[in-house]
View: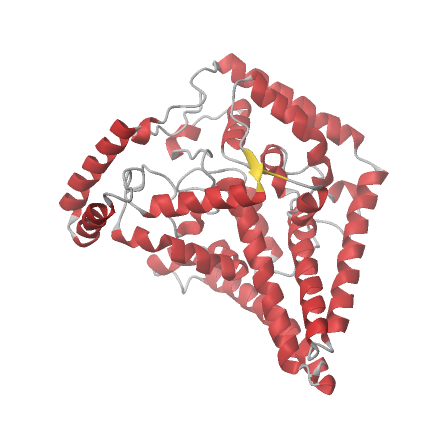
Length: 410
């Protein structure tokens, strides 16, 4: 049986200890049946949906860019920037992400196919498909295997050692959110690992790096040269430049927030590498169920999130058309209830808050936040200072004390 990482800290327990191997395999069979029902019913209405979304996105982008030609006028700047932000979010989330998953390959339309689609992102589609489709979705929330888990810059689990540098992870997380598309491109390249291993001269890395730089240059030329230059006759060069930058930041912040909500809020499990050795199909399904979280909300919320508001359903069935996730979500939730598993779903704001709470909590030593209150804050800050400036032995001893106090308080 897949073993969820033990979380003795704060008394957390294995959430699937009550399931037998037979239970897990039966769960897999029932999930396979849900997937097959959708595969068998895909048709004209699904094809019409994605074509309609693409057409809408293109019209919003063209209209917004036209309005921004007159962005020296504040109302035009606001309207154009808002529209361009929406178009970029749609291009990234509901269109690009899902097409590149192969969700629409069954249509046999060469213009809407995972092998030909390119999106408005710094990361080339082919590189993203490898790091996301092949690695992330295979090793969902497995520490050391899933780069999407913390993006390689964050402590993501209590069992990972705390170091003084962990204190900066909320700052790193925010910077990564602002420039999210470039962060994705960097870890698609495995840039940190390549630099650490001094492999920057590797021919394959250089080839892939050139592809990324070419893609970034193309995107930057469109947003920060061509479009602003076209606005010069109306005196709108700088406002248009600012509008494009703002739209990119809005898209990045939104995309990052949706991804954080899907993988990082409190209640979402992480896994050890050894826990997936010999993993069966049913166990893989359970890992997707426990390693993902949903965002509840309106139909507009679902579309703007690329239907990653149904992250649980997406991780169970990444190749199903995104417009069908809302349809199968009640069936999936019913299986959670049947097998006594927690279906982690919250509205957007509470889910974002939960994810950031976890970012901040794990930036601190285990138990520090749980044992800190207004009365003892000065003493707790003194302990944190000693741990941040002390040696490993000091961190270990003080860390054990904090964990013991947190368990007692729980």
